[in-house]
Length: 304
Ligand SMILES: [Zn+2]
Ligand SMILES: [Zn+2]
Image (cartoon, rainbow, N blue to C red; front, side, top):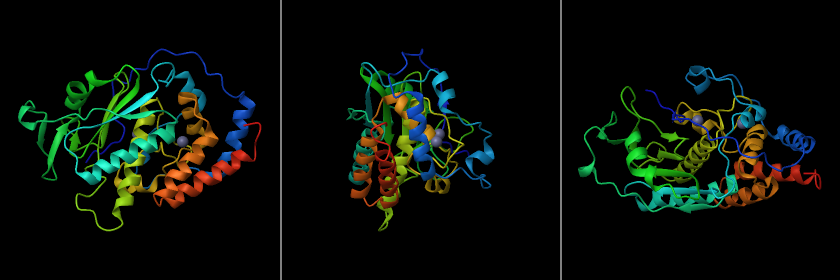
C-alpha cells in the first residue's frame, strides 16, 4: 500500500509578501529555547515509518521563510472547512470539532463552508470505484478540480474538504488519506480510515485526535510547512495509522515559529486556548503539554 499524508500536487508557492513585524530575533530565540525542553528529539524511524521510506531533509525556520510560503495575511485569513458528501451525525460532530481546533491551532478565523453535495450517479467514469477494502472510493483530483476549486471564497487562506468516503489519488495507489493543491488553496481529506464506522466505547476520542492531527498537519502543508525531522512534532510524516497515533498533535518550537510567521498568532494565547480545548475533550496529555508551554512562556514575560 502507499498511504500518504503528503501529496502536494501543483505545489506552486505564491510570491513573497512583506516580512512580518514580529519579535526581534533574540526574543524569538529565547522563546524557542524555553519551549525546546518540552519536546523530544525525533528518534530514528522504525521499519515502515515515513522516514524509513522517504529520505527527507526537514526544513528549518530560515529555510521555510526563504521558500516564500503562503501566509494568512491581508484579506485572505480565513480557513474554510467543507463537508463533501453525506455525513453521519457523529462524524459531522468530528468536523465541527476540527473547525474549533484549527481556529485555536492557527489563530485564524475558521468557517464552515457550504457542504458539497455529491451524486455518484452524476460522477464521470473513473472518478469513483470500489477500493481494495470493498468500499467506495472517490478520486481526489476530481474532488479538488471539479467540486472544490470554484468554491474557494475570496477571503480564504485555504478551503479544506472532509469526507467520510475513502479516497484514492489515481493509478498505482490503493488509497490516500488526503491530497492538497497549494496553488489552488484546496485540499480534500477522508475520515474513512481514521474513524471506525461502528465505534466501540472509547474510540471516539481516538477518532477525534486522529482527525485533529490530520487536519492541522495538512493545513500546515497548505502554509508551506514541510515534514519535520528535528523533533517529535505534528508535522512529522505518517506512513500508517500506527505512526499517526505515535506522532504528537502539537508542533515543535521550530514548526511553531513557522506557524507564527504564517498567521501572526500570539503563542501564549494559543497555548491557553488549546489547553482549554484539549482538557474539555479529555485529551489530557495534549492539554498538559499546552499548559507547560504556556507556563514556560509566562516565565519569559514581558519579553515574549
Ligand atoms: Zn505530511
Ligand atoms: Zn516540527
